[in-house]
Image (cartoon, rainbow, N blue to C red; front, side, top):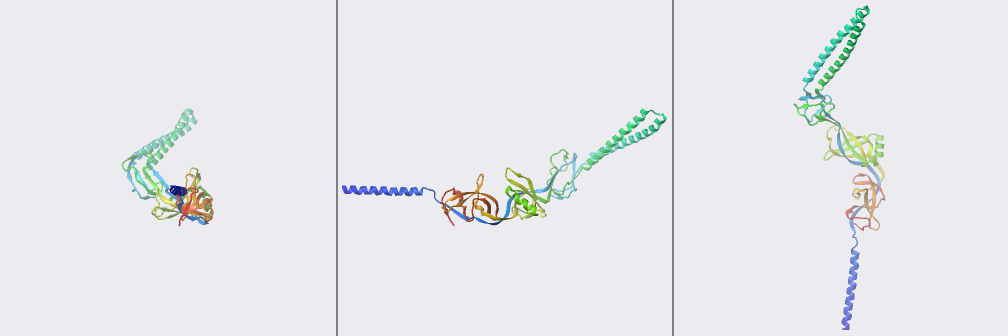
Length: 364
């Protein structure tokens, strides 16, 4: 019995030791496991300062053609989508009511001119007669007053004739600018009014043409410095299209405080008509060379709610959180400012599982 008791006690003690060892191993395994990541070294050197942005194409001039008189559209002198020059006829409005009004105004002018001539003759005759005592001074003054009033009437009638002639000229609607005619919004035979808000047709100038885009305000000093040195080329590339080269022509006079960006505009000759109003394009703005700049792979930079950041592989094998400010990107690398030194290993893959202090499993 004593032998059996000793054997049982030894077995129980062995079981306790085994369970304790297993418990210690499970406790070690319960900690966070290393996150598999890939890293690249941060570099310092000269990098071309090439800004990238998304721009929107806009016509250099756009005019909605509206009639200046009310009437029926008799004739159209253009085809939708064609190019027109400034002064080309576009629309003819029925001129007959305006021709009649002009004849009426001319008739009234002729009548008032005849009355004026008679009043002037009467005043001249009465001036001679009043000196000899044949007519009274009052009669002479009355004829002089009538002549003066008729002079004012003649001036008013002449203005009415000019206004009627001008209205008649407005019956032929001409192109106020050169450009491409859009879709017709009012067909022939319809009545149009000079108070209508909707234009009959819109003309857009496509050559030259503008591209509007915005860049972060941090680049404003460099942009102004480059413009002071001469022309600044800009490249715009439509999706699936060929790049077009133009010149930076406008830096807006106000920074957008809500977005922290400045609006720019580039002008393009657009002779081949590859840029079209409303089109979105990829814009490249070269601003020289950034000297001795810190850069990392753009894949390493993450964007939070209020800041950009990345993870660095520390010497202890754990992830370190670093706040950075991206200045611009070039050839897949981001030039940035922040607490980063050349040669430090930044995480470029596997950031999803990372948090500050987590162990890293660096893979090639």
